[in-house]
Image 1 (cartoon, one colour):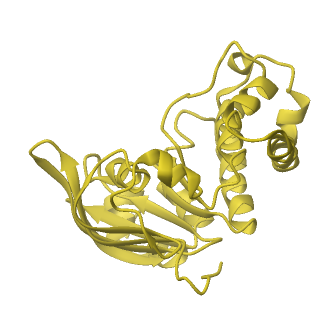
Image 2 (cartoon, one colour):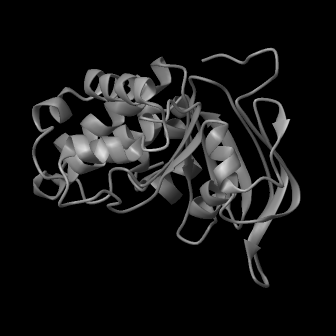
Length: 243
């Protein structure tokens, strides 16, 4: 986990955002370092997914700033942020089920020159060996967990600096959830900054350097993953554990 001379990989200052007349985010402040995993937890409707979409440029910032590697990207569209190394893995299945695993990876890097595509596929297979084994198999025939790994690998094709991941373990078996959270730690080990929204908060916090609680569009608590797991209020309200 490191910060460059330019500052954090991602920086949000007093960010307000929402849809039409509805304000969802009401003054979010956040720094995310390279190689850091930060887990966002909160009740349904608190603004967690909106936060990811705002960072990626899918939801317009009404007030405040979004910075990437020291550059103010608040007014930039998603395509420009993508070129800066910001990628999003949205909730749900977003692969091409009738195409093979390798064809999906090629689609993930379709804008890249050949040498970067080859490097990206090598990176994906190194990180997710099961995808190499399944490379000629239709993506739709894989398990839900393997498809989730594929979608993370498709994002990895772009050699991202920041990954925004929404509910990666949703609907997966405990075994596949463990593989997904192991993959998040591997991403951090490659100096990727990961901002994670996850309903399995206990396991996500164990895999995270820090956690933050979003309530009514504001950050109400911040701490290390361990501190959040030990916080009586967090345990009772969000983890389903005794205080």
